[in-house]
Length: 336
Image 1: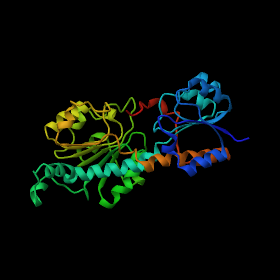
Image 2: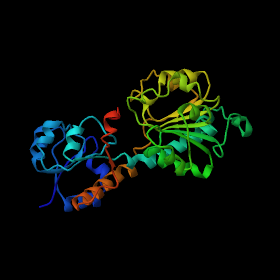
Image 3: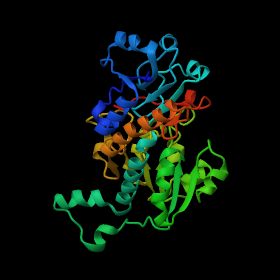
Image 4: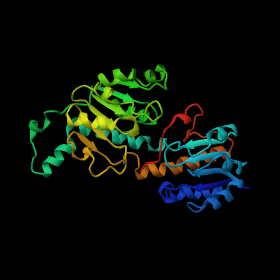
């Protein structure tokens, strides 16, 4: 008999994350059961036969107990949320997997675009041009800088940092990285200099904030840390808003100490009266760095590839596995 895959991807629509041919592969190799969104009774009825759950429904102990044959839970929204009884899953050798790597390339490219915008004032000068305030030649470049050979700092070197590193390589930066979860040797092998947070902030013209949010990293960049940035620095925020104190950030942007671009916000949608909407020194992005069609479709490909590997008695290789040592530290929450 085919292994049973319970497909409950909401809020992701099935057609967003599965190409037609990928969904056909899934249905050919597995028995796919699709409870209606929000139908708890239908989900509970499907669990006794489930070999894998694809989605992020609540899976406390009592639900996992209903699924004696469960071998995998795959989150297809993007993070490891506290919706699963992780200790029970680990005790029973249920793999808990996430699709975070699917977004890494898209976020990295967007982050690079934001950095180039900050370096050259691209969107700022576009707004000025449309309003009849354009400045020609050198007049509009008084604060322009080069990314090439710049001092660049990365705060965090997980999926996003690893995707961004090769995009920065052609610019030949001096690269410093702060990531307390990695040994220095890993960073040196990536041709980066391991450094403390204060050094990364104080010695970088460009800083990319790529860290996940944990109990230790909430407001990792507070007022003191933001004050370490050099005058005229460029700060790019593309991971999780909780890593940065946005009230302190707004104050420093208003004072013109440095420029910033952010794709993530403490409250989404952003309030209509948020001070960020009227600040000139910030590029605004509405949490759209990773959510592009190519990234969404990569999720389905990764899911089916790894399910087929596991059904064949092999380990998954494309999705990210929840680590027992780390998963309890995450403070992720669904976007929006």
